[in-house]
Image (tube, rainbow, N blue to C red; front, side):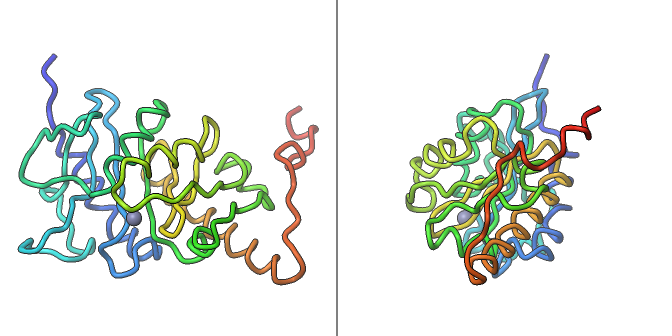
Length: 219
Ligand SMILES: [Zn+2]
C-alpha cells in the first residue's frame, strides 16, 4: 500500500497551536513544539523549524501547510518545511515508546523551575500517578537540538512514565491524542506548582503509586 501524507494530521497540529499558546506552553509563541505519529504510515508530523523569511513568527499563525512531515529516521517526506530542531528528541521517544502517538514539548513555567533546579517533581497528587505514570524525572542536561537530549529524555521517561523534564530547558508529555497531551501537560504544571509551594512550607511529602487509590476502588 502506498503511504500518503494526510492533511487531517496537519490540520490537527495547526489547530492545536492556539491552545499551546493559551496554556502557557510557549513563552514568546515560538518555543516548544508538538508532534503526532500516524500509526498507519509511521510518518511523524511536527511543528516546523521557524526560519528567517517565513511568513510567520509565532505558533499563533501556524497553518496546516506549515506542518513538517518526516519518517521515524528523520528523512523528510516533504521538503518545504523542516521539522522543529527538537525532532531528534521526538524520534528517540517514538522509537523507545511504540505506544505513543503524541509528544508535547513545552517551555512551561512551574515545571521549568524544577528543570532549572535539575530536580525531579515528586509524586504528591493522585492525578500524577494516574495520568503521568508517577513522579516526573529530570533528564541529564544536553544542549537543545543535540541527539543526547533524546537519549537522556528516554532514560528519564523509562517505559512507564508519561512526562519528563529537560534540564535548564522545559518538559515533555507523552499521550495517545492531542487532547490527552494537553490534559497531561496541565496536570504536570499543576503538580509542579503544588510541589514548589509545598517545599516552601517545609517540604513536599511524596507518596508511592500504590498509596493513591484504596484497593476497594478496584472491586
Ligand atoms: Zn525546547
